[in-house]
Image 1 (cartoon, rainbow, N blue to C red):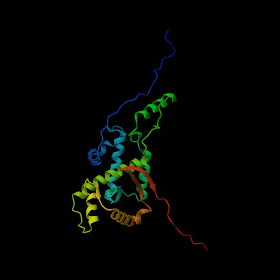
Image 2: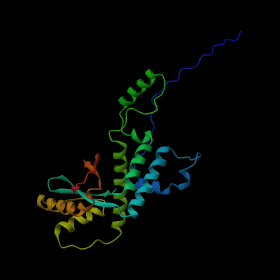
Image 3: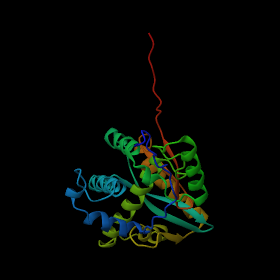
Image 4: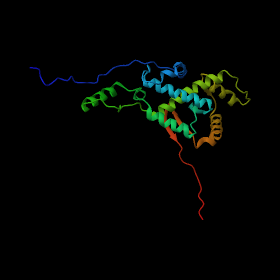
Length: 243
């Protein structure tokens, strides 16, 4: 007699190591440039969702560069040394909306980079105890989706602007500080030696220069070369006349 009950095999999650490649920003740009637009859409797309996602963000970076939405910044590395970097300027409602949209749509695979094996073992325990796989990974990289996006935009825009600036002659300055600092914005060497007084003078000049867009600027704070806290200035001073 055939049995009315059928033994259903237990479904379990197992740890699986996926190898990847670490690409420098310029290498990543060249890879994303080579991906045809037709492979980014459609149900038959042969690329993974994470790579398709970064390809779309890369095309956003090209749009920012075409509109000159980037600014130079500096940070002090050590005594007598400063580092220069090109940062994205997201001062329009359209770009801030894109940032929020991309952050909401970021695939989970983009958010688990850098996890330790212990995190995955605890995740495996959680999924087994719940009886079904979790749709959202509780362990993600320490950076938020917005921080990952801004870090990607900052790195790719910096790499591309440096490449293009290096192919063109820079203006000549007699000021020793500017003469030493400008090449750090167009070459692979982004640091230069200077005095504390000179660094403070350059920081003050840059703050004055970006003051008109400061109230609309989405700032990516850098700590040891890595993205940290995303700060957005949503306030402005106004006056109200009362009769």
